[in-house]
Image (cartoon, rainbow, N blue to C red; front, side):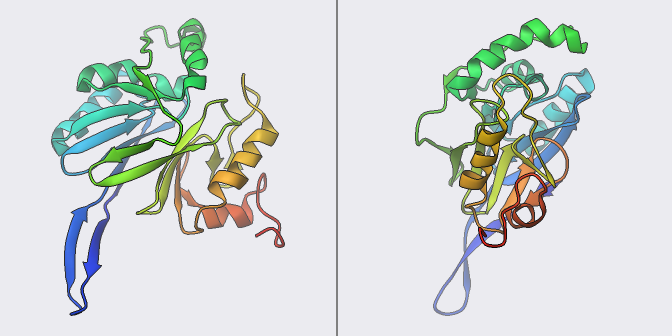
Amino acid sequence: MVVVLTFFLRRASGKYLYLCQMISIEVFTFNPFEENTYVLYTEREAMIVDPGCYEPGEQQALRDFVRRKNVRVTAVLNTHCHIDHVLGNFFACAAFQAPLRIHPVEEQLLRAVRAYAPNYGFHQYQEKLPDSFFLPNEKLQLGTTELDILFVPGHAPGHVAFYNRAQRWVIGGDVLFHRSIGRTDLPGGNLDTLVQSIHSQLFTLPDEVVVYPGHGPATTVGEEKKFNPFCALSPTAS
């Protein structure tokens, strides 16, 4: 799937002035957990979010796409560091010579993956530790567009989401799904914290904002506010 948006500025004459090519999104579904890996890219640069590519064919698919678009990968980002979202960290960082960035609270979870990966059958997992951490109030820059970093713990203690305010979409990781939410029975998970994160960070965004989750199809903030059985707002609250 590719999403391409271009912004224009309307002049007083009624004509439109081309401003810039905005961020496009390519999604891959990788590994047995059917995890969504996102490539955010402009004409020249890209960021990879949650590379879950483990098998050689998955890794080649990601490499081929980046080569075909002829973009430079400026960073590999993790929304959180559960195994299904980090299986391809080492490959992506090495293949594209890009730094890995995570929330500092997630480092402990990332370091733990090496110990339990064989239990899930991932005997060839290669650890990649972070090169830097997200800073408080930091915004990511891709091309001419800024991405807000939203702190949304609950599924994982240092979970973040990446919000494109200009184009009205958010890469949400495993916080909010189509008619569901992330599990909270893993280390560091907490249901009350997760629902609070959804209500305070995601449900305060415009209803038309598209949510690209870590698993399954995209949805919108408005849809989940109304119909999500785990976290929908009551009519009086909305």
